[in-house]
Picture (tube, rainbow, N blue to C red):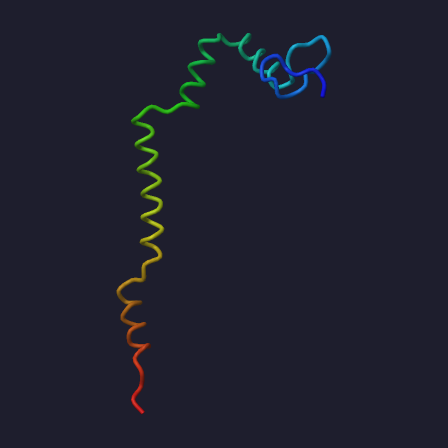
Length: 91
């Protein structure tokens, strides 16, 4: 393996005299173009969640599960039809 990136230590550096891989170099350029505080604010808003957001996400997932279960349940008319069809005929 070649020389690892100084930041992520996972990928190889772009060149022998460079310190970063392509992705980490892109992150560094974005930090230089925008202010570091602006980048941190954006990452905090998009990649982290507070307690309110976590609770909302949990409730959304529960709603998805409940609606799938409701869709699987037969309706009242389907139950009556299946009950009529399953009765055995007298011989």
